[in-house]
Image 1 (cartoon, rainbow over the protein chains, first blue to last red):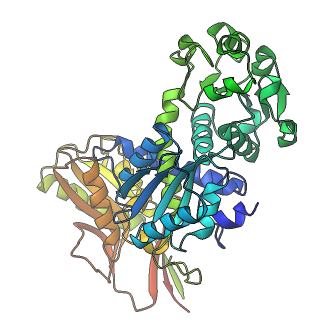
Image 2 (cartoon, rainbow over the protein chains, first blue to last red; image 1 turned 180 degrees about the horizontal axis):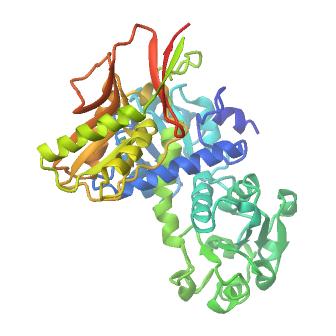
Length: 329
Length: 168
């Protein structure tokens, strides 16, 4: 995949943000550090900085989303950009030529950045390849492929809770690994940060066959998988998978893989529990855990804004970008 | 050509001038804020010499620069930290070199996003030529008239040295 050349310019800076693959560790750390500064903006009485004043950011959502779209919108607004939300009904298949037509139209309206969510893997890459040179594309989730800003906000949350040394951490990811773009991006990000151990925990039907090639250890038993973990990440069980005969029932899934206070005792006493949302209470986890003292699920939401502010401001190009222009000190 | 100056004497005279200013303006519990990076070094020294009660604040004005669209994001942005309420507070803003005035403009904008200060006074180690905005300092360590192509910058934090450099 040429994502790396596509999303990084000749000086190693973000140009688009499409996937964790292709990022370098220094660049990922830069994004997290910048997000740390943006987190302070929320403490100002005016929660806004003028960085992207006069820029127009388009949220192009071909797939339903509340949390991701809202936090992208808030992030853009806190950067003082103008935001346009376009929700395209997933069933009215907008593909190929028509997608390109739409891009050309938005370009003609002098938009500067597209934040894209699409049910097809590679949709954001496709757009990045075809947009005008001054426009940046941010991937807000594409098919089963990647959800890089979610992975970044998860790394940001882990770093805040557990410190910057990921080498001593054991992180367990529990749930539908097979269909999860979140899990895929998380694993790449955890690897990039040299995380000590990454465990994935799921029923056999929900782990891709080649999972171990990503450097993770696969478990089919919750207690073994989360034993002594510092971080337990629960994934959302997509209800539509129930019809695919991949799982017997939600009830049985909860019996085997649902996180309860009792089972959380297998993890370290100071372990944190994460979930990308929205939670199916009583399926992936008990309400007691979700609302409990070790849950950082709402912090994840808050951090999502700062992380997205960092990504958007770092990727925003100059209007008349010329790569040969020398850097002004 | 490079000349280096030790800044201790300048800091001493700034301290005296600030004491006079605080008395004359009847500032009660003023807070001090340094602008990253050099301004924070200078502010740290002045804060200690003056025995100012509220903890020292620091501003990183990267998010408020007017040249973001030209040069993009500074890779090393530090969080701004104002450990006191800005509302109705007298603030002494500190920077190392006052040149175009654009940095101070950005810092003023950022301060006002934290609240409505009662007043802001500006103290700089060096006032040099080249102002592009109607901004001037209340307290100045030294005035420098620089030749075209000449630059002055503060290196630090230990020791603080003022380096005057002429482009070769």
